[in-house]
Amino acid sequence: MIKLENVSKTYQTDKVQTLALKGIDLHIKKSEFVCIMGPSGCGKSTLLNMIGLLDRPGNGAIEIGGKPVQSYRDKHVAELRNNTFGFIFQSFHLINDLRVIDNVELPLLYRKMSGTERRRRARAALEKVGLGARMEHYPNQLSGGQQQRVAIARAMVGEPDVLLADEPTGNLDSKMGAEVMDILLQLNAEGTTVVMVSHDENEARRAHRIVRVFDGQLVA
Amino acid sequence: MLMNYLRTAWAVFQRRKLFTAINLLCIVLTLVVLLVVTALLQEAFYPTGVEHRSDRFLQVNMIEATNEKGSVMRRSPLGYKVIDKYLKDIPGVEVVGASAGPDEAHVYRSGGVTDIRLRHTDAGYWRIMDFKVMAGRVLDADDIDKGRLAAVLTRSTAIKLFGSIGALGEKVDLGGQVFEVVGVVDDALHVNAFSDMWVPITAYPSSEFRQQMSGNFTALLMARSPQDLPAVRQRVIEIAKTISFPDEPDFNIARMWADSKIDLLARSLTSSQELDPGSGKIVAGIAAFMLVFMLLPALNLVNLNIGRIMERSTEIGVRKAFGASNGQLAAQLVLENVLLCLAGGAIALLAARCILWWLEAAGPIRYLKVEMSPAVFGWGLLITLVFGVLSGVIPAWKMSRLDPVHALKGAA
Image (cartoon, rainbow over all chains, first blue to last red):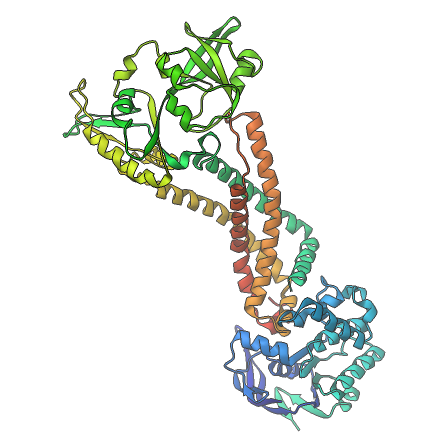
C-alpha cells in the first residue's frame, strides 16, 4: 500500500541544518493499523507528513499503491491526497468560519460530485461519529472531543484508503481519547489503513504494529 | 463548492469588519471616479442623445491655409463658403449641416440683459441632430430660405427668459434683431448641440458670411451608413487640395479633415495634419490612465490581502491536505476578492449615479445629462472585475503555493 525506501529529510534554516529523517525504510500494508511512536522532536510527524505527501523527501523514494510519486506535479499530488488519504490533526484544524457540515464536506469539494451527494455523504459521516445533531453548529460551539470527531468525519467522508492521524488524542481527556480511538479502530476494522502518531503506549498497543522513531531513524 | 467558498468569504469579511470596510472604501472611491469618468467619456464620444447619429457623421471644423514656402499659416474654423462651395456634394453623404457658434449673445429685455449662447444653423443641421422637441418645432428649410427671424430655445433658456417652456410666439431681442420663438427643445450637452438658442444662418444681418473662407462654422457630414465614413474622410482631404483663396493671395494650399468626435479631440490636442490624428493613442492614453488609476489602489489592496490571507494559512494548509490544488486555492482566494470588489462595485455604481445626479443638478457643467446606460454598467462591471482580479491574483497565487506543513503550523 505505502512504501518508503531510504527516505531522508533535512530542514535548512539560515544557520542550522536539521536532519529530521534519515534512511527510513517502511512498508505499510493495506488495512494495517500502524502506530508511530517516539520522543518529541524525533521526526514522527515528519514521517507522517511524508507518508501523506504533505512534505517531499530530500532523498529516497515513496510509492503509493505501487506507484512512485516523486515526479508527481502539484495537481496529481493534490488528487492523490484527496482520493487516498484522510488527515486527523492533534489540534483538529477545523475551519471555524464554516459550519460543522461544511467542514466535513471539504474534501469532497475537490471531487466531481453533486452538492446533494456531498451533503448526503457528510451527513452520513457525521452520524457515524455520533454528531448527527450538530451539523449546523460551528466548531467553536463544540467540545474538544466533539471537534476531533468532526475532524474524523472530515477525514473519512471521502472514504480514503488511508487515515493519517497525528496524535489525535493528544488534546483530549482520557474518556474522549478513548472514544476517538474506538472510532479509529472501527474504521480500521472496516478495512481502512490507519497510520497514527502517538505518545501513549496503551493506545499503541491497540495497533497491529508499532514503529519507533529515534533521532530521525527507525529503531527496532 | 461555490456555496462553500461564498460562506467562507462571508465569514472572513464579517470577522474583519474594519479591514473589509477599508477595502470596500478603497474599491468604492476608485470605481466611483472611474465610473463617473467612463460615463462622461461615453456621453462625449458615443452616439447618444441628440448626437445618437454620430456613428455616421463626421465634423469638419477647421481649415488650414498656407503656401508652398510655409511662410504663413492660418488655422481657423470654416467659413460658410467652404461648406457651400466644396462640401455640399460628396458621394455617400446624405445630409450636410452647417452650424456657427456657439457665440456669446445678449438678450435685451425690460428687466435687463441676459447673456446666452447662440448658434446660426442651416436646415441640414436639424436633420442630423435629433433634439427632443418640448414645444413647437425646430427650424426648417423654409425658415432658412426666407431668412425668417425664427428662434429655437432650450428648455432652460425658455424658463429663464419667459418663466416656462410655453414660450412659443414670444419675442427675443438680440441687439435690435427681434426673433420669434418657434420651438423649445430639451437641454443638451454635446459638442455640436451645446447652445441656448438657435436661429437661421440667413438671419445674419449681412450676407457677407457666404463669401468667407474662414469663419466660425462647423460642417456636419452625415453619411448613409457608418461604412461610408472612411471614403468621406478621404474625399474631404482630396477636396481640400482643390480649394483656392481668390481673395487671399498669401494662401494657395488648404488642408481640412473630416473627423469623428474622438478624432476631433485628438486633432485639437495633437495638431496633426494626418488623416488619422492619433485618436488611437488618445484612447490608449485614457485606457493607460485608467489602468494606472486602478493599479495604485490595487497594489495597496494586494498588501492588505496578503496580510488577510496570511492569517488563514492554517485553513490553506487544511484545504491542501484534503486535496486542494494550488490552482483551486488561488481561484478560491481570487473569487473572494472579486466578490468583495463586486460588492464595492454595486455600491460604487449607486454612488456614481448619485454624483452624476449632483453634477446635473448643481450645474458645474451646464446642460450635463448623463445616463448610466447598460454600456456604462457593463464598463463598471468590467472595471470591477479587472480590479478584483488585479488585487487578488498576486496574493492568492503567493499563498496558494504555501508549503502545506508550514501552512498547517500557521507559519505563512
